[in-house]
Length: 94
View: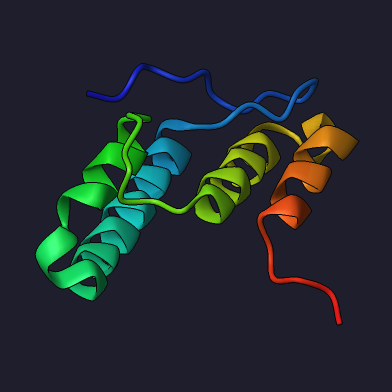
């Protein structure tokens, strides 16, 4: 269920109902595509959407999803620790 969001006004850039519907559609579309890509591990997509812990995701993916979640709110909320954690789980430097 979508929560009612305020309409845009001249003093602020608040999301509109149409924006919320678009976001829901895009998220649902991406989730459907991801479920197809995961084949027999489709439930991992629902774990990510519901923010549940799962062993199906690598530590690297968990670190990247943490950054992605913060970027959704504000890119400025990503910390150096978040970046360092993602790099620590990334491929080794040559």
